[in-house]
Image 1 (cartoon, one colour):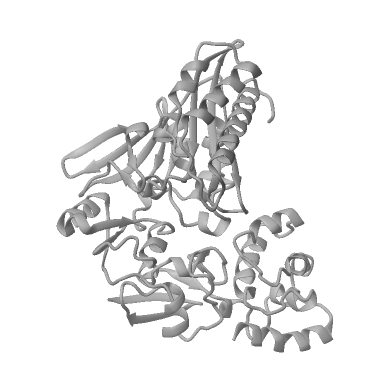
Image 2 (tube, chains in turn cyan, orange):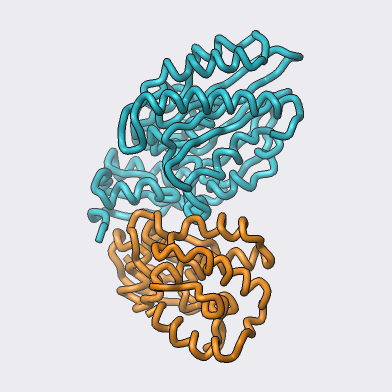
Length: 291
Length: 173
């Protein structure tokens, strides 16, 4: 039987209350949202917080809405809600592509976007999606609110910039016009972590790439992205040749490790194939096609 | 700490350790052993219950997180001693072999039917993709859900119902 080590449990009644509880209980306190990453790690004693601050009561952090030139996503928004969001379906199909292959429908009822990002698992899908879209993370503490570009959010495996007494409250996705986006993942079985995955948005200006964002997960990519490939594409023709070249750059630049999910060269191969597919599909979608 | 949970419509209060998982609360504290404890890693879905009406893997939820909320277990399916039409579907279509995954399958399947009364096979398979049957009896489980969709009042063949009631009771014990 796997049971977490003893801990103290506190339930937050508001964001301010959560911050106060985190401050009171110090660096060994952890926020728990859906709990589907943290509790398994606590069972294995890979995580051993002294206090859990439960924020499941903060339903005001559960939303997906357009605010000016951005889509605001509350940190407590569950995977199932992201998958079903009409706003995200309209602007960024990459979310539904990814959500469909994150865990399974029951787990998606509990897991949240905030928890996924803060867990900072190196194989997490939404980290790649958010990196591709260059979202902004809104982090709150007693001192106020700070906005962190997602590519500065993850410090390494299981480590983010969210410090003691801080809580991620929102993710802001810039709204772009003339774009398409897509996510491609290979997993060993339905609902598993990715062997490798890639997600992109492509913004077209006629036949050219006006802007592009590339995200990758499970392959040791710096900040879940490949800026070299993005720069290669930006301003150039949106053609198969260019997409293949960029995909090859991604495959070369990432640092996958051989493990039970596959050898390094296989993962590199996957990165090339999946990035190429995601770029192609996103471009078709940007042109209004159904892909 | 004290938790008050409404389980199958009945409010219960107990003093529990914060680290107690919901699945163990249901089984060991309340004696509701219909909810099965399987992989312990949120993969297999045998421990699926409804938390505020949503299928949830109770091995990956703390009992204290259910404080003030509603939980429905397999014991809460069916009314007045009669089987839920989906339980009847499992009887009619041989939807279980060893029965270990059955409670989770029933709660996921019932949730699906409540939201999509006439799901096609692909929809059913997607819905139960978080519930693993190690007997690999998926064909009959899908047929059982389809049977329930086609018999929303649960009336099937008389013989199957009588024999099946025993089987279902054993499987959920």
